[in-house]
Length: 214
Image (cartoon, rainbow, N blue to C red; front, side, top):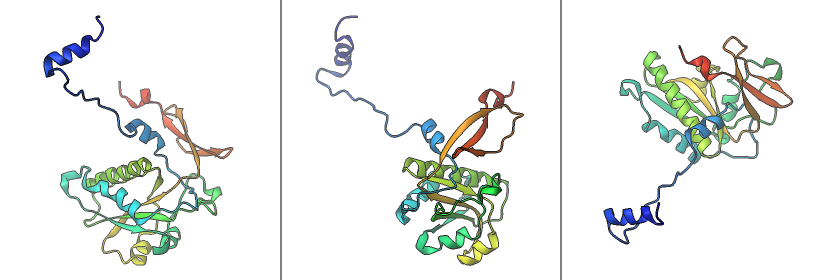
């Protein structure tokens, strides 16, 4: 191919001297965000999550899909000075590792998003909850943060402690993760429970080949 062939062809179509547009990838790929989006149960204590950060994370919710477009989810932002201790007193973390009593002292999360619903729980609402929680965690990762979706909590106490007008459905912890987490491939029949060894948190994931039906 002659030198400058592409440039000459470009000039034929668009005219000589026309500015050429170069498209560059901006930000991290989805695969990268997904790999970084691990469930952290321990956080760096001296890293402060601000209300503005939580607002940016919640802002994904008017851009994501909603089953039947019901948009029934509402969000309560909680920081260290607005009641994080009340949240911590009513949640359970690390059910597969009860002997560790997670979070470890000094690694507790201090920022939370309480997800509430304006309607009773149903199948469509559960679809929205999953989409919302995952999207917010991906946004947190994009911002250099980490998080954890918490479903084990005292709903009545949380509702009363924060005078919530709607029932809480899930709680998302947000912070700067202090853990080393690694995915490992497993067979479908293997134990799916996460575990820890030499301060590394291992999360088993079934191989892709076994997820696809033949």
